[in-house]
Picture (cartoon, rainbow, N blue to C red):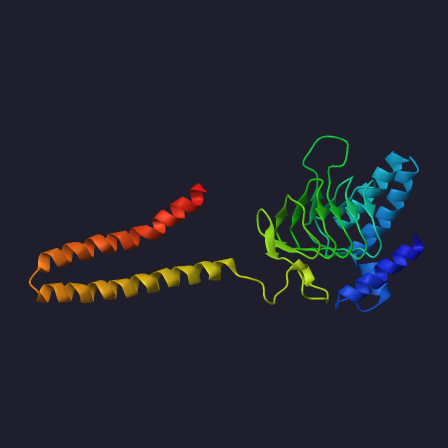
Length: 253
């Protein structure tokens, strides 16, 4: 146990630039304190001393604000940053070199006593406020963005964001540590993408309007002014209605 705690201290120093010394980590980091209580509680749990394990876990929760069930299985070098409000359920499994931020929940969505909590493989990063729910697997090196709600499996190296969580980057291209599980480079912006689509639609409509105006002027010169205006109104109505029809057809599919 002491070897694992030593590794826990080193992992905090490696992944938190605010950590200066081992003594600072030992005395001032609630994430380390939570792991200390967890390792004692888990040791009691696997020996059949379930009440003692739950009591030690409860004491750790009162002191740190971090709730880790003694039945959970946690690997080496887990880094819990800030940690307040973090919850890890009974059947959750956490691999090596995983990073969890405050407000994260590894929760269950069923009442059965079997496997009902998620499995995080090695190197996973889960951002603050994210909820990973159910007996799903988050693949090695995957990243879960802040406040995401993950209800389905995440592949190795993928970055997922949103509610419900969807893949934003299929494979992590950064090899260095990514704070809060959200890379700041090359992350697609869905709002910007939607605005670009609307700008394209407006540009196309403006070009079509110019074309119809020129055609109307030509028809007016030839003397068929009213027919030209009616044709222009009909064509403009079709142009404006077309995007709405496409959107309605897409939602129906």
